[in-house]
Image 1 (cartoon, rainbow, N blue to C red):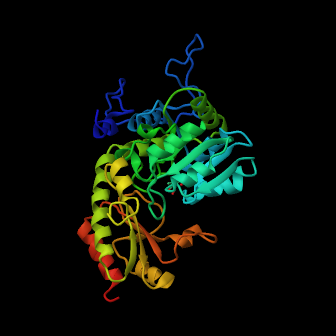
Image 2: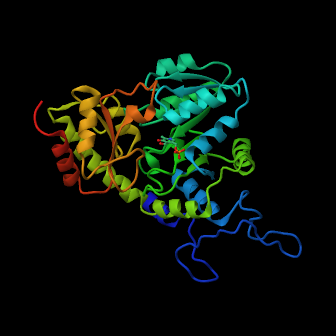
Image 3: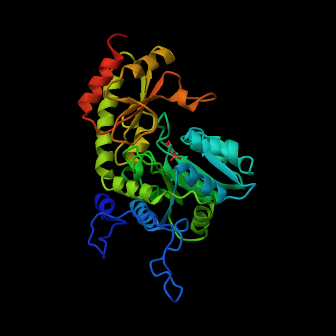
Amino acid sequence: MKIETVAVHAGMAVDPTTGAVAPAIHPSTTFEREPDGSFPHGHIYSRSSAPNRAALEACLSALEGGAAGVAFSSASAATSAIFQSLAPGDHVVAPTDAYYGTAKLLREVFAGWGLDTTFVDMTDLAAVERAVRPSTKLLWAETPSNPLWKVSDLGRLGAIARAAGARFVVDNTTATPVLQSPFKHGADLVVHATTKCLGGHSDVLGGAVVARERGPLLDRLRLLQTTGGAVPSPFDCWLVLRGIRTLPYRVRAQSEHALTVAKFLAAHPRVETVHYPGLPSHPGHEVARRQMAMFGGMLSVQIKGGADAAMAVAAKVRVFTRATSFGGTESLVEHRASIEGPGTSTPVNLLRVSIGLEHPDDLVEDLAQALGAGA
Ligand SMILES: Cc1ncc(COP(=O)(O)O)c(C=O)c1O
């Protein structure tokens, strides 16, 4: 079935006891045993499994075309579980521009735990090959990457990981399963911040791992989920699942509108550079055309005149909201270097833009007034 149909129906069933079409939220932490001691509905205690989480996990797995989903209370918790599935002494190859929380986990938490990480530019395949060692157990990719929306070639990275005997993990948060299917390019695991486009309404924090196949790795992730306990609440699962119902339509509209905004910005005299994979001038455009259905709702813009000029533009927006995060219905703008803090390599004149679902004319008009006239 097509992804629109999967998004509407996966993890969804009419309630046989009430006929309710929309799913109920089940807050129960505990589930009744039969007289013979069995659990015919499959649930015992909600840290181990629960109805709303099971529905969400089934849906996420179906969207990515995987074998099973493992939902967490945030993508950072999902990411941590993946690193915890490795052993001290294992080597990880990760992108220099991985989501900064992922890089922070590797540097400040898992380095002390014995994981050794080499950060490389994932668009430089020769550098990735050089970074791989006999102890490399995991290759992490995130494409398009934050905040320059660099595009790395999933098929080629998957081949490098396979040749090295390493697991290939793709953070597919930005592209979503609507635009990109990492399993088709050899990924073993796909990670999502369901906080973003999947939830889609900036009102729920969540994360998930989808495994391509059943086996020891999935079992280990399930163990880390249920014993670690960083699980999403029933209401959080319900919200993400509700968001997913409209995911394909939202992502397509956001991609279309982002292209309109990117073209407007690229032609504006106060703009130094626009980073959007949908522009032919973007270095990753050709790879993105091959591996993505559209180019997504995220872009960044560098304003002429440095940090103060960029901050002044952000200060003037009226339709956009000055806030971090992305993938919601409302368009956001943020001065990325400020949120990443000291040590960031993000250019100080860069504004990161998340396109929501407003009419693109209104977004363009808002940016036009915020940029003002002149060079
Ligand atoms: C690409 C990507 N991965 C992971 C995360 C972490 O998500 P969470 O805040 O749910 O832990 C984010 C958050 O911005 C992200 O952008």
